[in-house]
Length: 110
Ligand SMILES: N=c1c2ncn([C@@H]3O[C@H](COP(=O)(O)OP(=O)(O)OP(=O)(O)O)[C@@H](O)[C@H]3O)c2ncn1[C@@H]1O[C@H](COP(=O)(O)O)[C@@H](O)[C@H]1O
Image 1 (cartoon, rainbow, N blue to C red):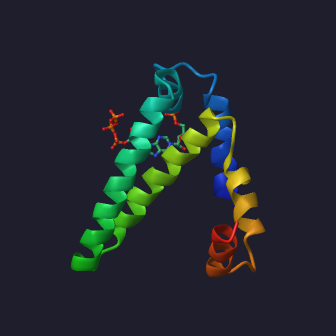
Image 2 (image 1 turned 45 degrees about the vertical axis):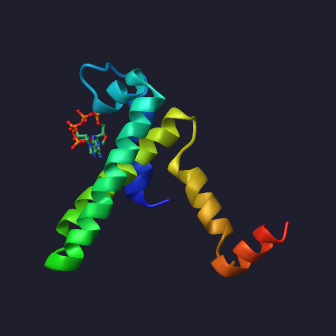
Image 3 (image 1 turned 30 degrees about the horizontal axis):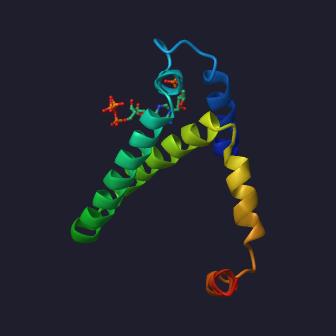
């Protein structure tokens, strides 16, 4: 795992037990899964809009900013469900050398 993901994973784990008044992450956990999913949905849409705007303006700054927000909120979602970035990285690593088209063909033939 990258140093940044590792560090953020540790912070997110620690914030699960923090005071909701002093921690944004703790406040999301306190509000529950639906609020976290609402944020994931919101940040997904903001990422899509930023990418569309980048194609017109030629500036990628907002795409990076919004994607960071999206990744962050998906990490909070994983943490809320007792999962972590490492679980997703393990799944991505499992897919190395497996063509997406091949995987799809195997899936539809079942
Ligand atoms: N990486 C982040 C991070 N990215 C985005 N955000 C917050 O995500 C929120 C969502 O952004 P929005 O623009 O939707 O804000 P908003 O309109 O105020 O949100 P809502 O009122 O709709 O919930 C903002 O408050 C951002 O500050 C983050 N908050 C925290 N982190 C990391 O998590 C750590 C722990 O944070 P705390 O739990 O606050 O200590 C921090 O040290 C950071 O490393």
